[in-house]
Length: 276
Image (cartoon, rainbow, N blue to C red; front, side, top):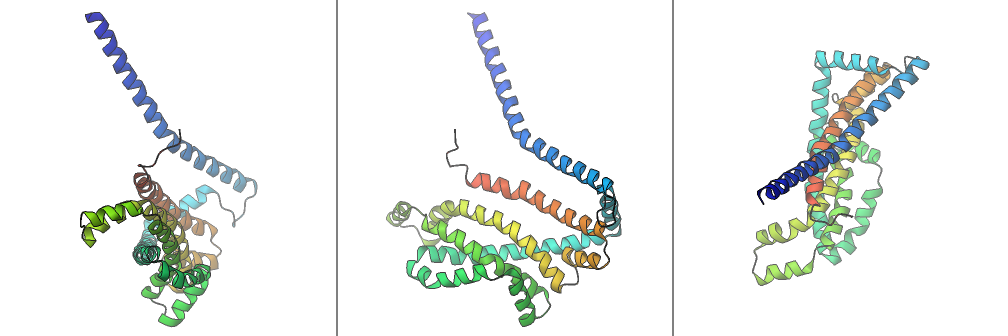
């Protein structure tokens, strides 16, 4: 009897270890695949640049050397920090304003019918037009730059959050009424939990859109930032420096995507049933 119990315990422990190892490998596989994918891209880039050597098509090593030089001088960290500040300010401004308007329109049918043409109009105005008008009306300053980026993103947030507000289950609102929830309790315990997946979706799409528009804003009317530096090196035909600044900024945004945005999105949708 004792031997049987020992065998059962050993089998159970082995099963747990095996399951843990399998789960660890499953979680590690996407990261390994991503690294291998980027490695293959760099190898293909190096081979192509070596076969057709040109100043306008530098090798990865040349770009990396330029990256080290710009980093050592302090220029790259400074301009990258300025751009990230503008991305963050524009992002939070667009999310706050767009979410408030979207939730309001999603919960008020008549207001949505009246303002829907406005939303459609702003959705289809080119980002370049908004940026140019902001600089013309408000001057070449920081407020105009951040405001122009936020205005380009706000309509997208409105559309996403409006759909989220429409999808709110009325039964929970009725329960909140029965239990006499105050406005803050209703917002905290009824509205926000149901809107969390939509916040995550708007945030993810917002990051990918905003950082691209920020570079255009800097290129057109700012005296610092990654976009300004890219414009400067374009005039000098320094492709290695252009790629060094671009890849450094993209690398930071990818880290934000994988470390912050995706985990938040997974956490907000963990209650959904997964496909078998």
